[in-house]
Image 1 (cartoon, helix red, strand yellow):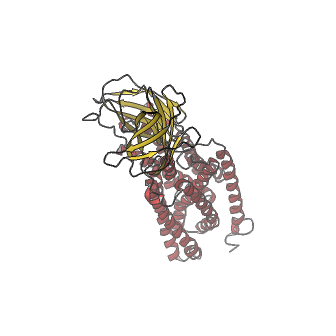
Image 2 (tube, helix red, strand yellow; image 1 turned 120 degrees about the horizontal axis):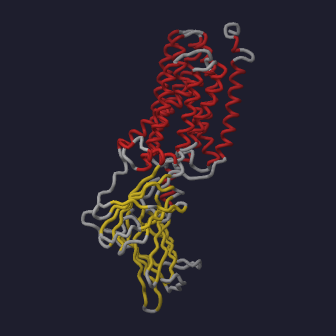
Image 3 (tube, one colour; image 1 turned 90 degrees about the horizontal axis):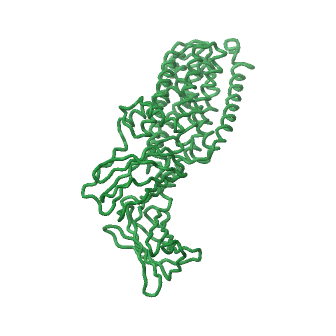
Length: 548
């Protein structure tokens, strides 16, 4: 065996693989240190509070509209739709996680809709519509704008899938050709085509990101406003780094063996870096952990997925180069799979937080489907590694043919997994939903005689506690004799509770049970003095319970 495969002995393939793994570990550590220094930010903003609250009926038009999010956001588009359907663009001023939007001066009574779009730190646009009424609700309220354009979502998903195929199968394939089978060109045409497709998909995906950020239709693709909007998101870094990684891999295919190794290695590192630059997982806290884990997971998948097509084509051709490539892959892949599985588990725990979220949320269902396919992929890879590799190397024709077919099935499973991963773009992870559900539901009620800051925590249906701070109408101290809270919702029995004052300046109610989400009417009865009770009326929006 040593004479037939001299590079398998001594400082040959084992030494090469060891040096390759050490070098990859060094690159991973360097990239982890770089990525871990980025600022801490939570991902995928969600609307937690608003003034007026959703569904509220206010007696007079507000001076400004306020939106409060779960993290710092950048405003993209805010549009007010009046009772008669008239639309006007508004300017939003950001202050951290809050947006202040000046009222345009409209005085008509009826139902108004505020359509808003912001971009969160993970680079994903987030949109919503706030409905409220001035005076009395409209008999026929204005039509809400369409937030989920099916054609746009399909275009975004398709572009992202093609980009993933270019990054994982294309860049990974170029790396496999350079390191596992130098001098061979097995499947180079397919790999080159995947890289070219990825190079096209990167700017297309970038442009679609901009249209989605603005809520613009697909027909406006290519307009300058879309590119400008996309450049303001963190996805711009992902698209740019991905384009560079794809270009380096394409150059590697056209270079000599020595240069191809370094170009393809740089491309592989670019894959992990691009994925860590934006997205749900990369923007989660703590970023010193999540970004490096995304990098490790991404480079590991690129190594594994990229090697499949070259191996399949190489084994169809046969010869000593095929055996050498399989031996090299077999030496390295257990370490690579261990690293990517470990990174994937860390990211799953951070993103999901609770096991029931795997079947109670859209993100969890996608992730569950991905995990099922991943287990099937690991099982198939294990079968190839321990049942087919040795017979194939022993030149058993049946095992060789079965190995090629099995590798092609692995590739199809990889493509299916990437299709699911591209769908993560459209749904927030459970950890974000948990933060949103735990956030208090708060309102401020102000009259000339008295005012109150009222909060229910957590702000979702179920068991909650209430906090009430009362003041005079001119923000002075108010030594009330007692405070009573009344909550009611159409079709339900009024909930009434006496508050107590623990000594910290607030009135509290420790235990309330809100049976349903939706808009709840709030009445706060303040006993000002003997025979003088002031009632403050308002409304608060209660979110659904998470269900896990």
